[in-house]
Image 1 (cartoon, rainbow, N blue to C red):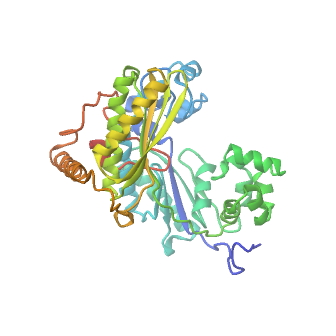
Image 2: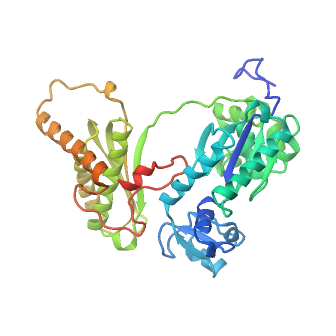
Image 3: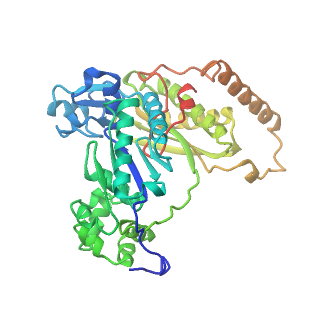
Length: 427
């Protein structure tokens, strides 16, 4: 069945073409690999060692008690009194990520890194028969066990397209291996719930149910135009085609924002100490901006205080990469924030640089030369700071001081759609 979204020549992929791997309880399994005493134990990885925080990852032993990412540690310990809480080490997870990719490359080229714990690989032609693909997957699993560690396991899905291969990793966990053969996988899909399909969240599930779709089988039976109507845009139709085994090209995206955020350690929640953290977050964001050879035209600050009240504002800029310009913008917003929130203690802070552009896209203002000398001086100082810190180590020269944190670094953490560069942990 085709729609005007695709030509009539568009057909499902008739062979196995993609292998997708998903690391099982990645952060927790790395901690179990590093510390054998944690193996077989319920483990929660946390941003700080306090019962008021939330788990950012949980081992399968902890998941058996109903503990998952986002569970309050106070509640988690009620469910599992012997829960082991481990402070997150994002630099370690990035290091393992690269070790895992290196091992995967020994068997099969990594076509796309999807997240810190997921990747998609296009199968070579001689590996596309089911038996060959199955043997390859087993080789990858043996390689992980031997060269990465026995505690770090993965689920592997093999299918005609990367979307279906990813679904395959969800069917059997942990340490699963599922092959969705062309034209023969519907019954495997129909055992899943709607929210097991990537791209369907709680809100979209409600919209599907409001349209009379309560199961994957019912979604499968829709016409692609009906899926588009339910979504309200073409993404519903794209998902429908992927589910039916078509190869749907991904749309290219551009970097739109660079930012860092942090939940503050209890000892760093006063405005004075939180400002030092926020300034360091700002400098790290500016450093990344320069590494990407981009310029920012807006800066924003967002905070939430201990009473749950949020505050955010932005500061317009001429296109810049300058440390000093961003710190000046932060100082102006910070002063206003402290006044508006009546100097209350803060729970988390976030800074962002956006409206990004390349140097060739900058239009100079011929009528504003008043700060040219200061601009050139600050640019020179920023370049010198980068050079010294690269040569002699992070923090050799910086603007102001930054309070020490429990994790040992500020701002750099793994997000769903971003894997930090190793250099960020040294900035």
